[in-house]
Image (tube, rainbow, N blue to C red; front, side, top):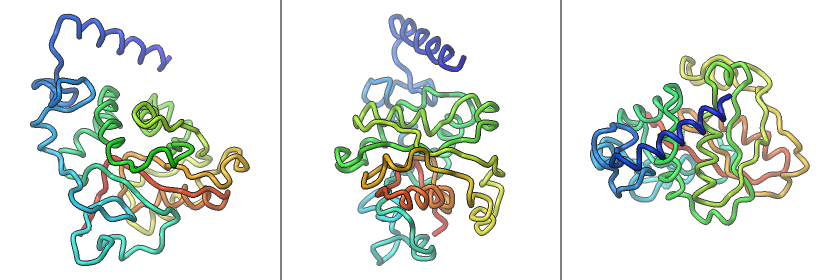
Length: 243
């Protein structure tokens, strides 16, 4: 059903493109910055806070200090991944785009978001697979799609890294956004299992989600993937930092 809905949306966009000029998929007012349907307009891009300079290798965010990693990561225990990528700091502009994509059924936003994320991935040829963070099946029925899977498919289009659904969510956990830091870790513990773990041993994979806040969800996923023998890096659209 959802596949048919996506096909219909693509068909509508195709016919509209024949007669109407392209518009930014976020504001739908100005033309895309490069004239492509795969990009936001200049105004929307300026509303988002890109990660500038050398990013924190642990979370992909702004370093904001004299150390080689950011203050947020200095306060965290060792992660279960080797490197992380992020496009934006989670400010109001980036949050508006992600919320519409994630909760507003505005899946056209995946095109510029996936393209921008692809632009920060170093040496994509090193990765065997993109592994999206899964939704529980009840959450999937409520939302109708998994934003991380859609993002993974778009990222794959630009990087040529195949998408693999290696993780399964076996518990329908509470929404992480409503929990404190320590409660997030408890909430997500044991919520995932690895499908066919023997197939990822020794592979470098790119674990994918939309936003990194405390990193609890990504940490839990990365932990079980590394236990299965994979080498894990992480990619997100935006990193929420407190410092």
